[in-house]
Length: 196
Image (cartoon, rainbow, N blue to C red):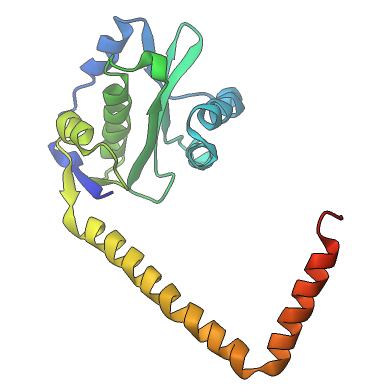
């Protein structure tokens, strides 16, 4: 999955998307302090603990670096920035039942315009699954080296593990005490199976 780059200085200072969401009964806004635990729990329930942890960071930032979308008092989406690292956008998520209403694009634009107002020139979107969404919504461009780096990193890790395993086996064969210890552990294991 590639990283993407958004030129914030090219984004128009146009917040009309907020009104477009309001016309559908959806409010896009920054949350207030007492909502923090509810938001983090909603993100955890809908998108997992990793995104919940990043959302927790964004809600602890001063000023907050998170926007939420709500329909009638029900949270339906969120987006954050400066949660993974400074200058990074994400995570972003909209509940399954509320997709297709441009709420994700509204949350994305709200965060990016907020970043622009703070003086950021660029935003990085890390490990993007849906590159078309970001290209269409804000003209994001893939960072080619980021994909290459992740592929090369994976291959390097696999090669290192491939060399490590035979090396560990050779050490065990050279050290009779280690081999005896391994046998003893296996025998103890057999005797304890099924017992706590």
